[in-house]
Image 1 (tube, rainbow, N blue to C red):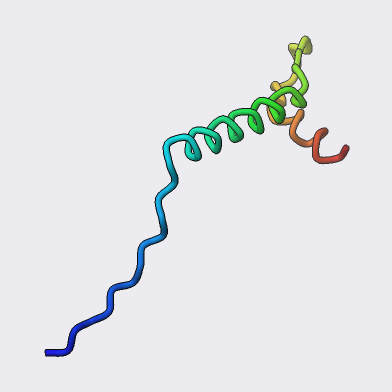
Image 2: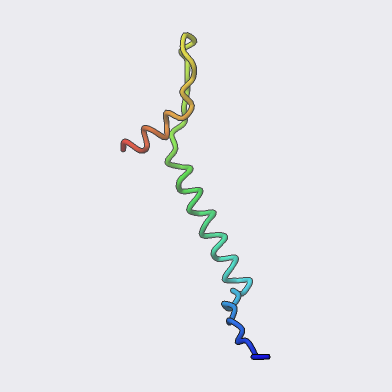
Length: 60
C-alpha cells in the first residue's frame, strides 16, 4: 500500500480573530440598514409597494 499525503487543513482562526470578523460583519450590516429609508404608505386605493425602497436605493 502506498501512503497518501494528507492535505494540510488551513489554520483555524483564534477566538479573537473570529470575534473581530463577527463584529465587523455586524457593523457592515448596521451601516447598510441605516441607509434604508423608512417607508410610509397612506394611499388606500392601491397595494403597498414594500420593496420600493430597494428600487430607489438601486437608482441612487
